[in-house]
Amino acid sequence: MRHFVRFFLALASLLFLLPVAAAAQSQVIIGLGTGGTVEFTNVVGTETATMSFLGSCGATANCISGEAYIGAEAGKYDMWITGNNPLITTTASPDVFAVNMNGGTMNFSFSIGSDSLAGTIQLTTLKDGTANPQVIGTLTVSSATGLFAALWKAGNVVPLDMTIYLGNNPFVGGVVTSGNGSSTSGVISSGEIVSAPEPTSIALIGSGLLAIGTVLKRRLRR
Image (tube, rainbow, N blue to C red; front, side, top):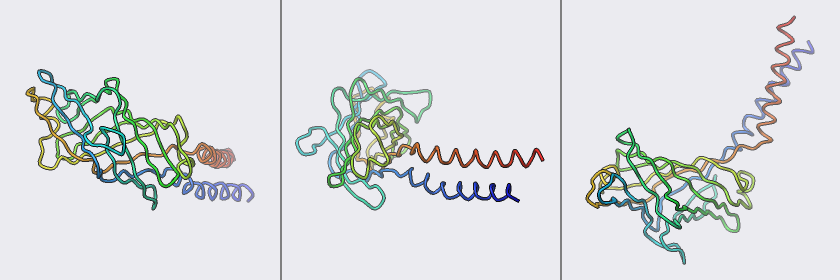
C-alpha cells in the first residue's frame, strides 16, 4: 500500500511541475516592424546578396524598430547592424539559403519601461519561396533585467526566427541568383525568441521522474 501511495505522490508532483516548466518556456513575440525595412541586394556576378537595414531608430542609423510582446506586456524592440552586412548564398535546396554574418553584428534590444533584454543575433538560414521569407538563427543574451531576468541570463543562447513580408516585391531567391544587381525589400512581420529553460524546473522534473521510476522498479521486482 505504501508503495502505491509513493507512486501516486510522485506522479502528482510531476503533473504539478509540468505547468511550471511550460511557464518557464515563455517567449518574446516580435511584432510588425514600424520603422525601417530589410533590404536584400544582389552582389553583381555572384550568387550572393547582402542583407541590410534601411531606416533609423533614434540616433542609431540602419535600424529597424517595432512592437514586441512578452505575455500581455508590450514594449519596443530595436535591431541594428554594425560592421559588415550578412551575406545570403545559395545552397543545394532551391528555397533555402545560407546566411553568413560576414563579420558583422546584428544587435537586438527590447524594453518595457525600465525592464530590458539585449543581445546579438546570429542568423544561419533563410527560407524563401514565398513573399514571406523566414530567417532563422539564435540570440546570445548580453543582459536581461526586471521581468526578463526570470527567463534569460547573460550568456544564454536561445532560438530565434523572424518572418519578413515582401508584399509584391521579388522573392529573395530571385535576387540572390539574378546576377544583375537587383534588389528587394520588406518589413519584419513577426518572429519569436524562445526563453532558456529554468535549471531548477529541469531538476525538479528529473527528480519526479526518478522517484516514479524507482517505485515502478521496486514493484516490478516483486
